[in-house]
Image (cartoon, rainbow, N blue to C red; front, side, top):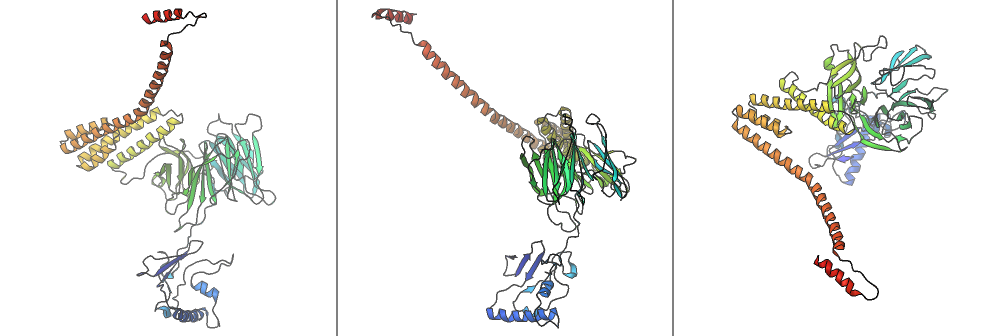
Length: 577
């Protein structure tokens, strides 16, 4: 409960229940005790009249219903659903007592004076790259490693079979597995194959893993979840397997079947995705508003050398989705960057979420959709399957995979200026990506050189285009993006030839400032090296002085019998020398 800070003008108190429903009281004023008792009696009479002429006393349930807090018949708890459409007889309170606001609780409440209630249905857990379970012939998973398909007969789940096909046969040969356990989910990586299904009346949920990297001859292992706990989503990564269950638990195993420490999920799981040592999890964080889905996500790093080696790479936060869109795919790019796809848009998380491609711009029919398989940042393409008149591809015949170029949804896409801006953004992202991949051992010299050349060409073309349009402020902004003084010198030459003296002078000052800043950075970088060099020389000189001190001291020979003259003669001769 909270009141309006400006109580002198707007006497309002807002209140909210535990489920997020909001109410508002207006004209809240202080009053004397006797007057309050009198007004309370009038309120009681009015409420009794509303409850019904036959009721002899106040009906608490009717009061709750009239004020927007009816009792739920299922669990017996009060739920705020909004005020009734009729106007309650509270005119007796016009002289200062509280009056329930006639303002609708939300813009969608309208004249019914009911607050907005979310009509969005909670999305069931799913496996990225899979088709619905109710299909007889379906894809259990289709990703960059291979395809897992399930062929079944209607009404006979035990007669179904599972086929596994790898894009690269050097990883493993194809598999044909009888689906006697009724598996409905699958996850495929270069190291393992996961299969699982829901619990049945006579058997609990069971997880089966085929470890391709096993060298002892025992490639398959299985485990059973506790009674009442179902596997809802799972994923495999580098030497680990993760399973999210109906108890909001994340169970982790090694590829050989060793159990690791469990993690409690922040909410009901939606999907999992893995790449290397990184695990992505999407979950329902709260009830969505205005037909929106409220999805949260987190990114966990898993250390294979410790049974409790977990690290939050990205703390739990809200996953951005388009308006009235559902999460349809989640995974990683070939380079290991987190990516998602909602009902129409592919977006990439490179520091922050950036939309890469609007797939609705590439389809002809309203009922056509793209089924996402994977994407590559270096190649700037998205691998997907065009589904005409459906959302999921058919199993037979197997459809062809399409390559869509990454196209940023910028304004005025057909404009030359926009095309140059898009090329600059993509090349800058690639330069940043190659710098990260270079630290992990990837050979990115060729992509980095291409991206650097494209970035410089785009900057110079944008500069020339702004000069031709007499946009000198824009040209200065473009020049601020130039990373080196060579580009600034080219810009100065272009401005001079275009007879823009003021612009050329400003760019010359920018180039000189850039050189001074770079020299200052180099000086700061060289200062620690110089300090360490001087300290090492000082220590070496100290050692040399100590050695010289011992060397310059003449030796003194002691001869028994008191021949001290011999010692003096030897010392005097050495001094003369």
